[in-house]
Picture 1 (spheres, rainbow, N blue to C red):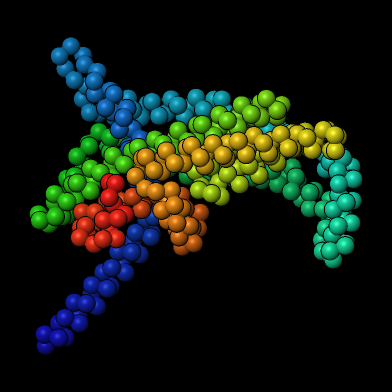
Picture 2 (picture 1 turned 180 degrees about the horizontal axis):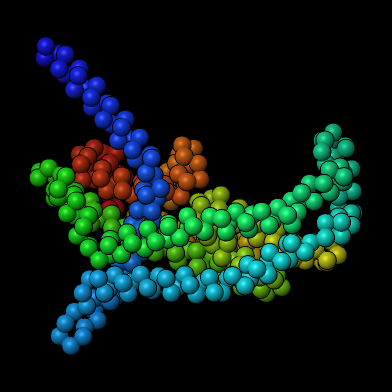
Amino acid sequence: MLKINQITKFILGILAIVLLVWMLWQVRQIGIYFGISIVLALMGRPLMRLYSRIRIGKYDLPNWTMALMTLLSFIAIISLLFRIFIPILNNQINIIASLDVEKLMVAFEEPLSKVEAWADKMNIEGMDKDTIRETAAEKFDVGILGDVIGQVFSSMGNLLVAVFSVIFITFFLLKDRDIVNNIVNAVTPDQYLDKIHRILGETKDLLSRYFLGIALQVSIIATIVSVGLTIVGIPNSLLIGVIAGIINIIPYLGPIIGGTIGISLGLLSNVDLEVTTELLPLLLQMLAVFATAQLTDNFVLQPVIFSKSVYAHPLEIFLVIMIAGTLAGIGGMVLAVPVYTFMRIVAKEFFHGYKVVQGLTKDL
């Protein structure tokens, strides 16, 4: 009878876990909102500390006021960015929408003829000029561009819900700084409370530095690309720089994707130039700008952000990101460092007796 009861409890436990996983999957959107809010709350901690120094007479500012001021600071920065970039984005869309594909094909007639001859020599199909012309016409179809814009506007309702949810959650995470501790105290056995609180404290400190470092990384990359492309003479260079900076968040693949998008937008804005004498030198100059940004990121920014903020060796981080990318794609690569940092902190508290853990956490 005892064995049957144990089997029953085991089966019920498995069913409970499956049910919990299913429920979490069903409300995964809320989990995403909560995750974004946690990141914003961590990035807002320095602002909260700054505002805590403000005194009105002999009174300190209440938590809700500091949380509101922090949120308003975020909203002001984002609003300013939108005010700057919406006209630039509109200008870039107009440039793409006004492209004359036939004129573009005439401009690239000579290079395409060489590509076609090379493809014939290598027995590669689908590289003839007619096929390339049809493909280009499809890619730059203004109707498709309109459909994309229409989809963006149709998603505005969901976007507004997401923005409101993130603001609401972030406000209370900033205002009630002990809310997480209270939840932890309610669900954690007493013998583990000290360790769990140390884990939470170290996680907040390390990830706050990490996310602020990421914001600095994005800003520096965007500045290098924007200034470089402005010197080269590319229209809407600020937009291209910001796109490159944001996409650079994706480890290792981000610079390639951002560079490809940026160079493509730069070339599309100058299709009227003569290919050999003007467009090709312009391409080389843009490549030099993105190469400079990439070298700065690889040898200056990433060692500082990864090694100094989360106290991990660059090779260690590289392996973690590659493993995460293999298991979970681009999303895994983006989340690899924060998750790995949390795992190291947990391992340090609960498994410090193992040599492997001691080696991985000696700098924490």
